[in-house]
Length: 291
Image (cartoon, rainbow, N blue to C red; front, side, top):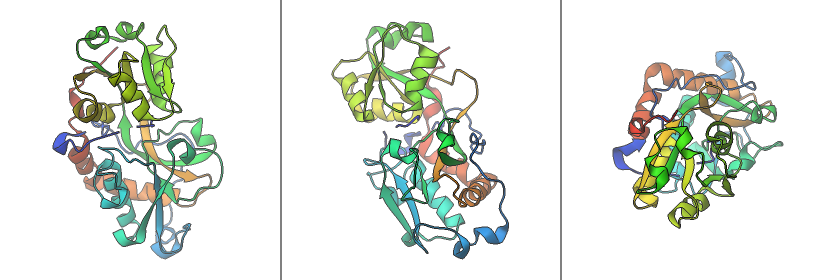
């Protein structure tokens, strides 16, 4: 996200973009900072270098929004990222009782320095800039950004990016959504930037902004559960054409990266990752493309 990211139990509106919408190559490599295939014994549970021996510690933000998590409870295995994290943990040899979740603010996850988690999942896009100070796993989800506006507003009828240039846009600080607003939409007015995504959503609800930009699954949650009479204007990709992917975040130099990559490869090859995506993010394909 881009993060920074909110969402739903849209029941089976399961949304991602995987990012759902676009059929995603969920195993795309993240920019730098990823390890190759490890020797099999290096990834045996007893050989893993963990923050707490015998326990896998996973970080994410609070509240933990749908469709990434359900009922603000990452430990229940429900929601796309919770399900992916639990599936990775299982591949590494951990039962659910051996996994601990730690609250980590979105931007703290990819800030420089030591981490209190083994890895973090929180709709963090793997970018070259971030990869200078943290490591990323292979991508487990391919992301697109989406524009949400109130029904009947001038922005709601936009059919292309040019139709958004004069809009006052709300977006969360530190996210790839903010970068996408600046690089792809390039609005004539400076965007309103908020510390939390919910603040941007409330600004839309209160008509303080014309639209908000979030990742596509979050956009479905915003329209379905957070802002009445709102709609997804459309979705768009990165300006470079290089797919944006969410990756698990690790402390720089973590030896665990290669083992998580191996688990993601196995989940992809078995079809389990695609099943998880379909269950929780499967309805995001309907948003029109903005070009």
